[in-house]
Amino acid sequence: MELRFLVRPYLVRGALPDPVTRKTEKASATVMSDRHVRERLANLDIAPDFAPGPVLRTMLESEIRNWTKFIDEKGIKPE
Image (tube, rainbow, N blue to C red; front, side):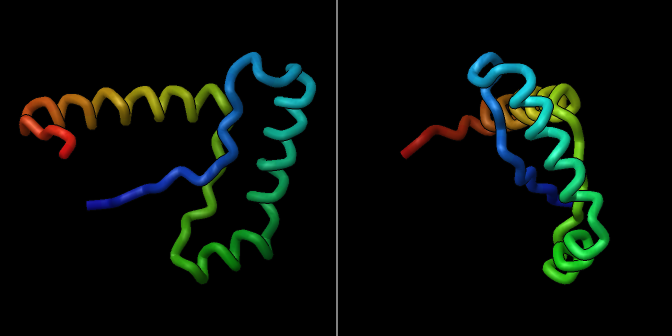
């Protein structure tokens, strides 16, 4: 079993002007491609992945569907 955690600044669509959103995404991609950053994260057992906003949105929607199905099938309720 592989567990993955998404650690990224999530920007609400329309909350910021498009140029700011693009600049933030570009900065994130630059940082995550830096060899030193990747090494430091790897030393913490963190996979230094980057994905652009639309890809992350698709991943998040898929995770919500999967976990909703699991929770509903198991009858899990908040306490």
